[in-house]
Length: 203
Image 1 (tube, one colour):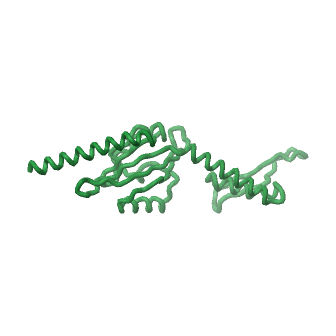
Image 2: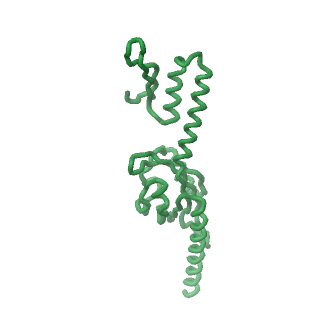
């Protein structure tokens, strides 16, 4: 019994030392770190997530990732993510979104790896997260700029390209539809030059 207790104590010391090294390293390379137990429920998450996503880190404790208030992740993506975790696989750059207290959409990326004890038993996951909102906005701006430039170059006139440009803007920005209005200088009336909407989108 004494030998078993000593072995367990040694294992716990090893896990704690490994955890502290992990925290020290991630503090230099990520916005926040997190840990989950064998049931994939969060047992720890650093306060850095409050700066990164405007999310109260205490709201994470005891919950799985898919039980939290995220947007921008469809059912198929969640299923693939859960399958990875069930297989005890390392995952990289799982992207999700949420709205902060002011209603602004924030985008985050998280990566994690499984943790095992000395006997090879699975004890949970450990990982890091980053706020990639600014990076995502920059990527969208660049994609939009290149797409609009190409559409204008391929069209006979700006008038012919309007609907295609509206469609591209909506697709890239995840909008259900859009319109382009202009003032008719001859009559002073507002006229619709072009429009696009997804099938079934509300007008």
